[in-house]
Length: 305
Image 1 (cartoon, rainbow, N blue to C red):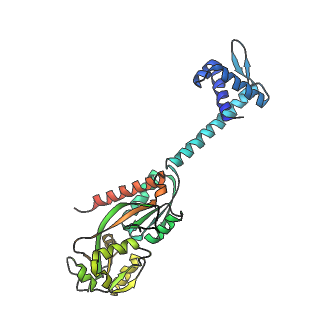
Image 2: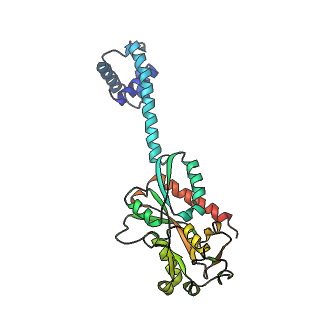
Image 3: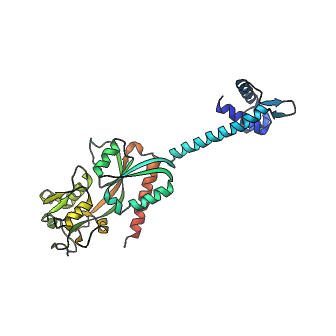
C-alpha cells in the first residue's frame, strides 16, 4: 500500500464520484479507477459499492477512510516539521562566545533568537576565540562570536566571518597610576607600563589587533602577566600589578580602583560571527547572525551621540 494510493482513495471517498475525484487530482478517470481497484485487491476487500448511478463506501471503506485521514494528516505534519528544520524554525544550535560579548550583544541576541526561534534549542558555550575556531573546524560548534579577525592560512580553511559590532580599545590602569587622569594615552606611553596581556594561541585576533595599535613598539612591551579572561586582567589591574588594553565595554565591570583611559587615535576592536563556510546556507545559523546584527544595532542606537 502506497501513500499515493491512499490519496487516490481519499479523493474518491470524499467526493463519492470518480469523475470529480479525478478532476480534483488533476488526472483522468481511467487511471484513477485502476489505482483504486489495485488497492482493493491489495487489502482483499471491496472499498466501494459501485453502480451506474452512485458510488458509496463499504463498511471496510468507511474504516479505511478514517484511518487513512489520520495517516495522511500525520504524514503532512511530518513534512511540515521537516520543512521547519530546513527553514531554520526548528532544530539545534550551539554557539560559542568570548566573555566580552557578555557585556555587548549577547544578552539581547539570546532574547531575540529565543523569541524568533522558539523551537530551536540554543546551547551557549563560553570559549576563547582560539577555542571556538578549533571547535568550528571539528564540527562541535555551529557558530562563534569571536574577537577580531579569524586566523588565516592552511591551518584555518573553510571558515567565514562577518563583523557584528565594533567598539573602541581602552587602557585600564589603577586609579593611582600617573596615566589615570589623562584624557588619552599614546602607544609610546603604553610601552613603558607593565602590561597584563593574553595568549596568542587562544586570542589570536585580539592579540594581533593590540600589536597593530602599538606598532613597532609592540615587541618591547613589558608583559608581567598573561591571562585568559578579561575579568582576571581587571583583577590584576585593580591589585596594582599592571595595566591592560581591553574593549571599551569593560567599563561595565571596572571597580572604582580602576581608571579607563581612551587610547590616542581611537583604535577599535571588533566582534565577529564565525561559522563554517559549508554552513553558509544553514538557516538556523543565518537566523542567529541576523539576531546578532539586530542586537548590535540596538546597542549602537542606545549609545550617546
